[in-house]
Image 1 (cartoon, rainbow, N blue to C red):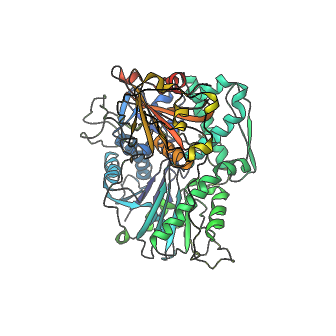
Image 2: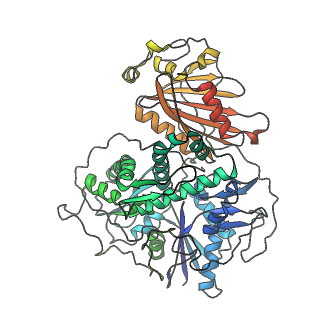
Length: 625
């Protein structure tokens, strides 16, 4: 029987075909999971999409899987169904596989997915595969179970450091998932962002206006420069897994920058420690002692990942030669009888206002891939040719992928990985106490619909806080006394002159659709022109940072970010808009508080931009000096 397994990841897609091994889909064993919408409505995928992105970045989406909870993605002026974007990726895989099978289709297609996905997200993958023309039997396979199938039939943990999130699963000897955990703000894209911010701290002072254009692009040239820089940073991150330092080519007017592995590791160490703490707590919840920790995802190539796990847990993790392809390879050999699927859906990663698909629905699309007339829009997949050697050099780490095919089962762990001889081979019975989560650098991802806030309208009186009475960071820890509007001294410091306009009153919690209520001391303020702001004082600096990061992580559209200072405080903000709703979240460094600015446009909703949110914050909300 001809079995095809496809791992459609956030950053890359991998396919493995029985009796063949890893399929060379797009000039290598991994194809970027990216799409580009041509003006005629045709979809480009993979490296072709990456090349086209330079023409019009607004038509490019590098990570469509991140939008799994949405109906559409806005590319250019068109709202593209998410199913169409995913189907285009599957169709490209099927096209190559059909050639290998001499015109035949696979009998069974195994589609991998995160273990925590419920039926709604799984069904979206299955419908996208059917839309792509996959006619064989479709079998969803949780990624953790696929990886466990390459093991020795003993309890194990799967440490999955993906592009978008970090996930961990603990399985028993029968490959049943006993417990899982995750971090939504730890992933390969977050590392790229941390590098971007690190470079910004180094070079932005030389040309603040030039750096601002990179962070808040307006023209097509600005967007091209930003895309180019992010690609340079991704390649630098990969090269630093092998090299002590690399040079990053910068767009004009900036000169090239040297980044060392030590600098990168200093940036990511806090996040990796957090991920290890989640690993430890998940093992405790599972109630078993895993014998191996399998590393999954391209980011696991960084030596520091295995080093921290060994330091904190006391076991050297199993690190495959090709962590990007291990999931698809494991799906090939998984016993279908051992597959268990989650019965319920988690809350969506983001909730957005309903979007109307403006493109007409086409009853059929010409080309080799049948399209469901009841689902798809007019987006044929452009197949094209992909000649060997036509891709930009440096797309993969040098020497990472030997030429030729990769045999199925090449990632078996038996006899391949050495365990620390000073450790008994299993987890110590006394796991380290889980520490409070630590924040990496601020996490802002380019390209990701914004969370929609429900902000109460309010009324109140005001007074301003002057310089000599500004509270210190220590004062905020026990800051519980509230004035008539609900402000504590610390929240008043963050609010600056906003309360002077009235319209502020205390609230029980901050309400954000699609997320848990945020508890703490909350003050709601209505401002003007549809703007409102919530000020939240939490119980810890970490709590404030994590809440702000969760909100920023929910943004699913292009956004802007920058630092701010004022009223004795400094911090950062992140802004995004979606379907006429704008959100900007801002934090105060070293203080257990943050704020959320919102805007709902009554007219010309599509014209509301993240830049407008940022401008309004800087002029009307940011505390003055």
